[in-house]
Every structure is written in C-alpha cells, then in structure tokens.
Picture 1 (cartoon, rainbow, N blue to C red):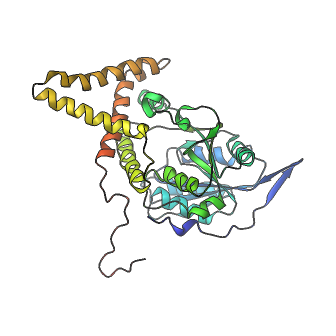
Picture 2 (picture 1 turned 45 degrees about the vertical axis):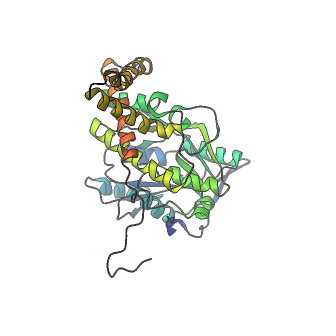
Picture 3 (picture 1 turned 90 degrees about the horizontal axis):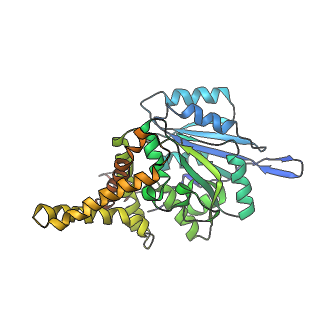
Length: 354
C-alpha cells in the first residue's frame, strides 16, 4: 500500500512569534469533520482560544455531511480569518487529513477530531514537549467523558485496563516513547518523509502512520500534559460498530506490518474463540464448556464492580455490557477481517491504473 501524495508539499513561510526570550513557532491545526453538528462549534472554539503565544490556523476538511456541519464550519470561518474550510469529497478521515495538511501553511501540524475538546494549554504543551524531546509526533491522553449514563459507562471502560488494555493514551502513565498516541502533533517533515496518511486505512490510520514514522527513525512521545476530552459513542449499536471496525482494521495493520500484533491486540479474538468453543461444547452436552463463557461473564461483573466505583448506579449497571460489547465486537471484527480489506480496489474496465 502506498501512502497518499496529498501531504507532499513545500512548506510555506512559517512565521515565529517571540515573547520575551522565547520564540514560538506557528502551528497549523487540521480537523477532518463529517456529521459533527453536535460538537463542532465547541471543538473549534477550544482550538481558537488556545493559550498559545505563536500564530495559529485551523483547516477544516469538511465531508458531505447529512447535518448542518458544513454550514456551521463556514459560519465559524466567517467569524475568524484564521479558519479555512476545504472540501473532503470522500468524507473519509485519512483523505480529509491529507487534504487539510496540504492546505495548511506551517511546519507543525496538530491533528484534532471534530468531537474532541482541547484544554487551553494543549498546543503549548505539544510544542514544548516536541522541542524538549526532539520527537516527530507527540500526544497525550484520550480522556473519555460521558454525559448520559451509557456514555459514562463507555468512558469508564475506555479509560480502564479491563476495557482497553495498557495503552498509555487511554489509561495514563509516565511520559515516554510509545508506539502510538491519540491524535498527535507532528513535524511536517516527518509527514512528508513517510508520504502522509495511507488512504487505504479508513480506520487505524494513526497507528499505521506512527509505525511508518518509527520505521524511518522517528520517535513518538507520550506526555500526560496533553489531555483531550473525548465524547464516547451514545448508544450500544454505535459502540459495537466502532469496535467491530476497529478490530477489522487492526488486523489489516497486522497483515501489512508483520510482527506488530501483541497480546493486547490478540486477547479479544482469543476470548471470542474460547467462548464460542465453550458454547458449542456445552450445547453438545459437554457441560464444562459453559465454564468459559460463564467465567468471562463473571469476570466482567467483578471487573465492573471494581472499575465502576464512583459511577452513578445507572452507569455502573451498564458497565459489564459495555465491557463485553467492546471485547466481543473487536474480537469478531478482527477474526472476520476480509483479506482484501485495505487493498486498493481493482481498476474498472477502461479506467487508467495510476
């Protein structure tokens, strides 16, 4: 798979602003958005009111939304000349990122999602961490926060080891080098070195991009200073769809980059296989087979009792189901990932091959 050429460009003039003895580089924030009417205004305002002394711009790559996303984006751009709106005809995230990066001006690229809420010092912390560490990409914590009881349960699951394993960008931890980070603040030179986001990865494009950066000698650095508020999926169906497709695409990354799968990624499919085998064995009269799915269910209930401390009762009661949904759909997605997923589509008759 070849990365998209969208990010291959010549950096424009990148002004720096001095405050006292410190010079702050100009920063481009890029945000692909699709059907983000609910959160877009808050997300953009959190960006444009950053406590950052240097110059900033925001490039919104707007997909063909079914709601008022484009209208809101253009209104916000009309209110602030630092905001630029560009079209992302496919609506897909990697294409939108490459389009926004190409349209941006500066040598530091901050990726943000339309449903992410930045704290006031996010960009400052990113630039300081990048300068202190020399890393090509720095990122922080995906701090999931819910409003409804279901969202609160998902948020707790997404920030617990039972729910998502030991990834520092989910659960926190000490600053240091990692495989990947949430969102990310990049040196443009690193993006150009690897050719931008691989547009065949409609999911897992962050992990895949960071893998290529590391393979070319770059460093990915995590810092708990960068903490982004993330709004979880609002219902069980949306959560299941999210994790099913994440599992499918994580297997594509594993096929494309051999040796990158570890126990954290393999645990959900192993659990699905084991529980399925247990159910089949139990159905055919081998009663010990029921121990596997029964044991898993008991473990999720106990885990929810531990991890759910402090949650409202209505959210705590949903936590075992949320855990199970995340694990099982991720595992099923991984196991059923088609071999052709992520491969370039064959050219149609008469269509030139590029």
